[in-house]
Length: 339
Image: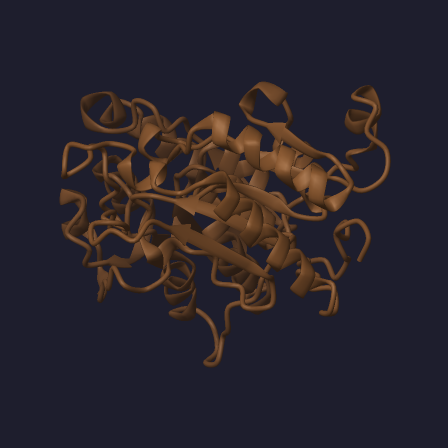
């Protein structure tokens, strides 16, 4: 059987689908699995052996430019017995699914006009974690009782990167980047947080962003060996949680349903005490502040609050057993340093 999973998204989106893809591979070993994904998604899904990535760029996928890509995508994908579509796929992806798949399963999310091409539409609830949403798709093809399990992405040892910067021994990571401006806390506050944590813990807290020029496995290796992670509520946060690294996230419009779902990993999301906080919805991210005060929810959080939360998380983590994620091939990923 040929099975195609469509998940064309960024880092966080792809990581949310990784456990479901691993569960599908484990349950349907007889199937030929493909995944339609972005370039960063291909790096995430490389953690699942025996899956063929078909890579497309997210930019230009919507509208007429996207429809012009349909013939090439159909040729590259080939015929599929089943196509599973994420709740947030655009119309172009639905059109491609219609042309390559006999059975097409997705959600009645009301996001794309192409949803009308689905053969089977599952109920959509924006209060359900995107991790569980994708697993619901996989459950249509797998035995009952399939549960959500944390899965590690591919990692590269961070030693060479750290050596070039003269870092030896334990360290923490502070990631200042995010996909949109509304998600980004003031970088100066991240710097103050890193300094406070370095003074209190006795080891350096490395400030990184996209300028670090790390591949995804390189970033995963760097975060995976860290004592702790601090960052915005974005993709790298989900990477840290997947790797079992204690974390603290600064959140503004990000929907609460997007919080990492792993109870075995110590972590905390900090949000301002404002009624509008968490204004984003699953499938409908916020592009503009509804109160026309962009950044007010993030500005309400202080570096002292963030550093204090991370110190509490680290203290609690010292008394707990290591929380290693599972790997589809049975191996164990890099462990957080000092555990």
